[in-house]
Amino acid sequence: MSDYNAIVIGAGCGGLTAGALLAHQGRKVLVIEQGERVGGCCSTFEHKGYKIDLGASIIEDPDVIDWAFQRMGTTFKKEVDLIPVDPAFSAILNDGTKITYPISLEETADAIRAIAPEDVKGWEKYSKKMAGFLDAALKGFFVTPASNLGEVVRLFAKTPSLLKYNSMFFSSYEGVIRKYFKNERIIESLSFHSFYAGLPPALLPGHFAMIPYSEHAGIYYSKGGMIGIPRGLQKCGERKGMKVRLKSPVKKILIEKGRAMGVMLEDGTEITSDLVISNINSKKMYLDLVGEEHIPWMARKGLKSYTYSMATPMLYLCLNYTPPLTDHHTLMTVPMGKMDDYWENFYKKGIFPAEQFGILSWTTKSDPSLAPKGHHVIAVTLAPGPYKLQGTSWDREKPALIENIIKFLSKKYLPGLEKHVVHADLSTPVDFEKRLRSPEGAIYALRQDLPHSLMFRPSARSRFIKGLYLVGASTHPGGGVPTVTASGMIAADLIEKYER
Amino acid sequence: MKALIIIAAVIAGLLLLYAIQPRYRKRFVKNLLSQVKYLIPRYFT
Image (tube, rainbow over all chains, first blue to last red):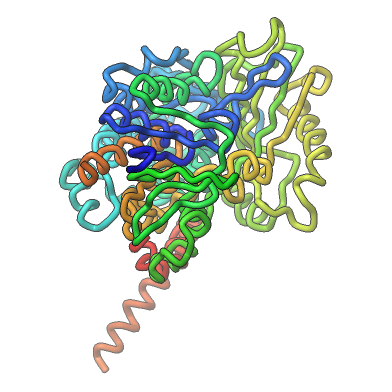
C-alpha cells in the first residue's frame, strides 16, 4: 500500500493544476516543492514591505486557466482576485517613438494609423487571422496530448480548422509579422513578443505570432502579486485533501521493474506512491532523478539532444518615486533584425551588455498595495541572458551590471531613476538555476522551436517508465502560465484514462 | 544519366531559392535543418 496515490514533484502552475485535478478525481495527492513558496516562475517574494514578482508579470489567455478551475467546480475569477490590465502594453522604440496598444482592436487600429496609416489594413487582416487561429489553438492544440504521431493526427482531426493555419508552423515569427506589416516601427513594436516564447523573431515558429494579438483578448494581473494564481490552484486542491510540502528537494524517483513507485528526498526520506507527476525540467528529471540506467538508448540520445530554453535575467527595482511610465507593461525595443543579431552576436557568444531591451513591468501601477505608500516596484525583464558569460561570471559582474543598467534605464527610459532606487537586485540565469532548480535558468525549460515541439517534446505520459507523467514547460504544449496549466489538465486526463 | 541531371537541377534550384531568401528566413531554415538528425531520437522521449 503506497503512502499516496500521486506525488507531484514541483509546485509550479502545471504541477498544482495536475495535483488539484487529481485530488478532485478522488486521489490522495502530495505536492513536493523544493523552494519556500509555490508558483515556480509565476511567484512573488517580499523584500522589506515590497512585493516583487519573480518572473511572470501578467496573464494572457485567461480562459485556459479558467477551464482548469471550472473542472474543479469554480472559476478563475472566484479563486483569484484579477485586475484587468489596459492598455495591453506600450512600446518605446529605439528612436524614442512611443506606441500604445490598447486592448480594444479598434483603438489599436487608431494607434497604428497615427504612426503608419499604411499598416491599418495589415492590422485588420492580422487580427482576423489570429482570432481564428487562437480560437482553434485554444480548443485543440492547448488541451490535447501530442506525444506521438497518432495523437498529433487526432489533435488535428479534433480541430480541423488548425490545418488552415499550417503555413504558420513552417514560417518564422518574423516572417508572419512581416507578411502583415510593412512599417519598420510597427514591426519593431511587435518584435519583443517573440521572446515571450523564448526565441528571437527569426527562429521562433510563426504560430507564436498570435502572442501580440492574444493580449487583446484580455490580460490580467493578480492582486497581491502573481503568486495569487498558483495559490488559487493550491486552495482548490487542498479543499479535496491535496497536501503541499515546501522546502523538500527530491533526490531520486524510485523505479522498480520499470514503474515509478515514489520519490526519495534529499534528506533520505522515501515516500511511496502509485503515480509520480514531474513538474520539473524533463531532461534533468530523466537524466538525474530517474537515472540513465532506466532509459532506453534511443530516448537517452533524444533527451541529451534537447537544448535548454533561454534564461531571462530580471532586475528588481524598489523605488521611492512614481516612475515616469503610463502602463503596466512598457516594452523597450530595438529593430527586429537587431534582436536577431543580438541572439547571434551576444547571447550565443556569452556577452551581456548593459544597453538593454526588454520589458518594464510596473506592477504597482495595477496594484499599489505591493509597495509602501508613495513607493513603487518595477520588475525589468532583460534581454535573454547566456548561462555562461565569456571570460567572467555572473556573480562577479552582478554589482557593475546593476549599476550600469540602472544608469542606462535612467538615461533612456526612466529619467530620475538613479536617485530613487531604494533597493535593486539582479536575478541572473545562475540565480534562477539555484532558486528554481531550473537547469541553466531556462525559463521555458526546453527550446520552443519545431524540433522541440509536439511529438518531439518529451511525452506527457512517459513512454518508458510506467506511472510517470510530465507537466510544465518541458512537455506539450510548452512554456507560459496558461500553457503549463493546460499541461496539468492534459496529464490529469491521461491519468483518468490510463490509471483508473 | 537523365535522372542525375534532374536531381542536380532540383538541388541547384533549391540552393538558388535559398540564396535569394532574406536573412531571417535563412536563419529559420538553417535552425530546422541543423536539428533534423535529432527528430527520431526525440520522438522516443
